Image (cartoon, rainbow, N blue to C red):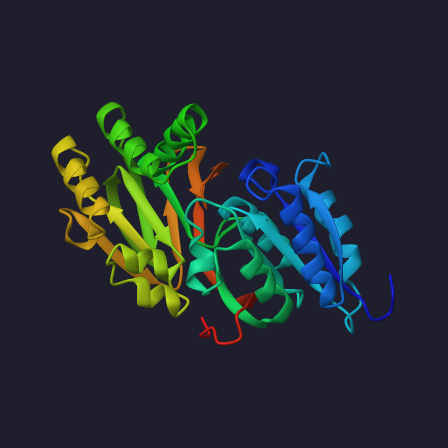
Length: 312
């Protein structure tokens, strides 16, 4: 690699449509554009190594020169961004984003264009800004983490996506399906800034992306922007209440739903007698052992954003 060339590593998820949506000629155009800005590009497909950490280790070896650190690009949906971000936290290496997901909340929050070539221009010419990253035990979340019904929504949504194709409508269809078939209740103790509250709930939701929270008209959007743990808990699990919640969710007005309570804190801990809990983290399903400790690491991740993007 020439002394002038800056390393750029693209970490992509083929399942997200990196090749299916962006044909080979568009990829070639992408490489041409970035090369014009003196980047030397190498692509790494998630799955080409047996372990994702091994893949990232190989990629990050290209970015060890502090005088020529380059950029690591996450090309995919929220799950891909989450995986790459976890490896870049607390480093100075900026993460570029090529948004190839369904909702692309992180890109939209940071005013990163959803058009791939326009997003590539941001990677080539933008500024680096530090953003807050929320964490639940050993996992981070850029958008949200949740327990209860929401992980079931995710699993059902993936079923619809596989059967009918990937459309935003399936997020709501899967929610309706789960409410009809599955209404499980969690018996927990929620410790909010050292105050303990016993609850029985079908759903707890934590949001880190203020755009997503604002679209739901949740007042805690401003708390997430300030680096607080922003949470929502549903206090009842009867079918009537849950259908009302789903209706308000579709309308983007969940703060007005019955028996829905939002809160913000510096630290939240969830205690349970269960030995394992299923948690949805940025759309991926993971199993965790309680207690679950939720916090926010402020300014923990560098992201390449447009020059005129507001600081978050």
